[in-house]
Image 1 (spheres, rainbow, N blue to C red):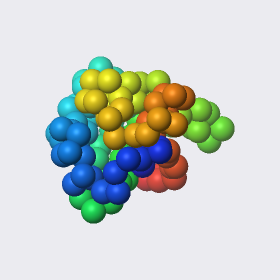
Image 2: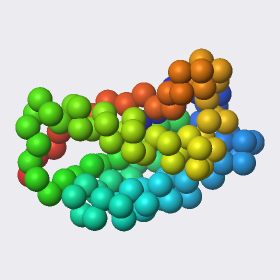
Image 3: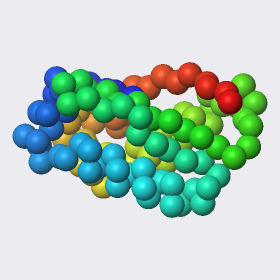
Length: 115
């Protein structure tokens, strides 16, 4: 996941906007995992201070059909976790006017890993 219309060139610059990236991510993921009661679980896999993206792992208890996976993942990101980042953690400060007008915080892509 990366910032849409980013105002920063790396995560270290977020401190100028009084946003602690690592703590924000931990807080949002912890709340998500708590509210999902084990159905879905998000985990941070990669976060580098000199970049403006991070990698999450989403696991779920039940297998999701490939066609529904895109919709489910998009729904989780756009409707469940974006708002806590955007409002709760003040990440709206990290994006430009273009992102704020359409209220889009993240660009994301995903790849399925099956065990």
